[in-house]
Length: 186
Image 1 (cartoon, rainbow, N blue to C red):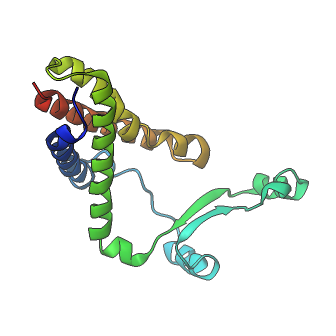
Image 2 (image 1 turned 180 degrees about the vertical axis):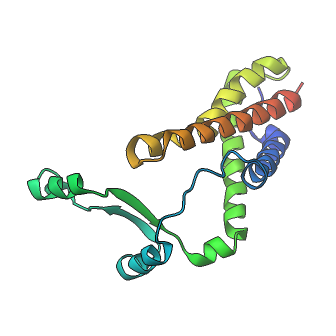
């Protein structure tokens, strides 16, 4: 029986590889350059956000709590638009990326640890590379590749962006599976 603790090296290496590749995807690769668009009046929008939603948070507009969703007044506000989500971020978090990078690496370690847990339940020591790969890959894809699906379904993330996240996640899953297959205990 293989334990999760015995897989500390593939956990660490796969998390490190995904961390580096994900940084390259976002900084070097061109496919995410079109994920965000500028607004026509950025200064006006920023002034309005400062006035209406100045602190970091997630805002939905037009807003209604559960009891007002079915009122005609709310439905009229939705029909007249715009309808949207507004994520207001802490400026310090944007200018100082170190905490986000640390949190990303911790997330990648968590995913790799869960992949190790799932894979140890399916394979004993000495399992063939492709067998381990075939378990670790889909497990990693669940975390990395499906990240944008719920956002697309419920919160308006464009399908093209969700698809790009899925493709990135597929690459991360292949890398994770490759490391686990390569370093699986004999």
